[in-house]
Image (cartoon, each protein chain N blue to C red):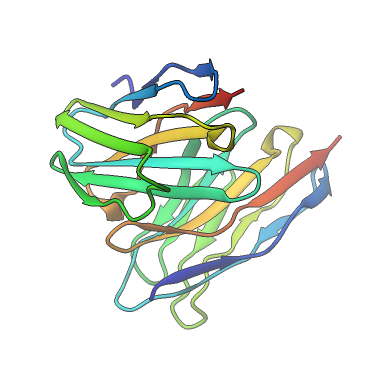
Length: 113
Length: 109
């Protein structure tokens, strides 16, 4: 089991550019979560999916953010256009059942300059 | 709604000291409770969990007991090491995990 795989590990981009973050959950996990972590705001849930369907996107900061899960083994989080305040570490996590806990990926550190 | 409150940090200890990080919760029903650890530059890792009242979760010398009467799930370790320096998060299961704000621990040699 390779765990939750995120790519890229680091991303540096210029303001206004499109950024796409990728996540491969653990096989068999029905839930997928996208989180953002900053020093100021801590850990924030952006969106989560169950069986590839978005269930709660109330944490998505604004329309510049979008997330998709086209199949059970892949999800993307897209920011277009990116802004410096989007700089953060973005984590993906997956779970078979919420009461079993989550498995997190190693995160993508995004820097928008 | 359900919520988790954990003690504010940072907590600074000397090696081999006893550690307690307090966590209390508010919940309807019988959620599972978790402690996660985040080492510098890494993602969150599940440290231990408990699924029902009076259960004790344990891992790597850390322990926490699910106390329904005090709605608490305090994290303890008898003798901390420098390698335990990290941020510790308490969480409970609802439709999704409800997180505490995290407690930073620094252990000095």
